[in-house]
Image (cartoon, rainbow, N blue to C red; front, side):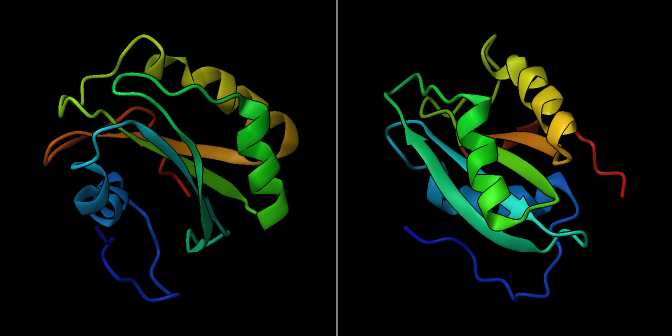
Length: 132
């Protein structure tokens, strides 16, 4: 399973652009994965990282682990992306706890732009902070 190709100059500026990048790969997984995209000031991807692989219905990650990766990469902003193996992109109670990540990022100067849940052919954008 591969992701769509993009050029280094491609800016990820909408939830749809993020979903398009991950959809083909993540919607077919039989387990949950949490990825973080690390972006520069123009929202070009610096790097991405698989933070954790979970079970069929859970994956745990602490804000600390997210921002260790973002700081190493020199990211200005991040986007969290994870899948629901059930195919249903409806946010769970745990998914809605992204506020802890947003608050931690504000303290260190790395903005959480969005948290996207990939379902089966569709997605949900939880944050939608796409203001530049």
